Length: 278
Image (cartoon, rainbow, N blue to C red; front, side, top):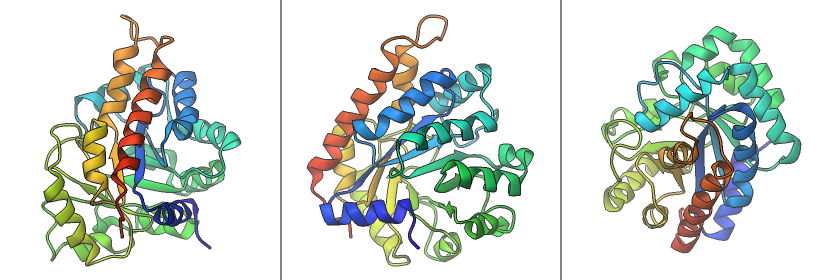
């Protein structure tokens, strides 16, 4: 039986285009606004949604996503509320794949078995847990797969051909290629380098390869979409949230539109690439 992620990529292959994968932070700047953003993303053009699980020590994230996580935590966001947000989203959208992204600590504290059961019941399709290497698959990856939740692994420019098969073992849903070395949002990726990296990864797997870290504009999204199965945008979207906030960091009437307008522009960029991704 195929899941939402597999069905979405199969549909996009028929459309001869890449996916737009959007990242927002659960609970940023508050629970209700974050849920409103979440619900608005598919209509704005998001094909797959990554929802950040706020954590106090997000070592792979740049300043924008770090700040988003801290805003969410300050507003009272926790794992129960994050899963509640997924349930609210699923009440109105049964089709769009949703992936939780973050770090292992909040899952460990919640309890792995309980978390996986609750995540599956809420409608979570996959997990990206950036601080669990393949050597720790027994911790979360294998139980997730047994529950029917995809475990999506990251590959980087420093993941060589010797290491890549290990990274790809037990990976499902798609492969997330980190296009730059460093933290999220630090620099713009080079489309030529990305294209050759995606081709290299595809020699090792039949999974779709989505490219993220550093994509901010519709033009960048269009360029990356020509050589990848998906384009991931995160820092630019959480920065759009920040820029819309009041001086005391509260949501305003501009918060949800600020995100959805950028998503719409990015989606137009991805769709204009007309790239055959396989």
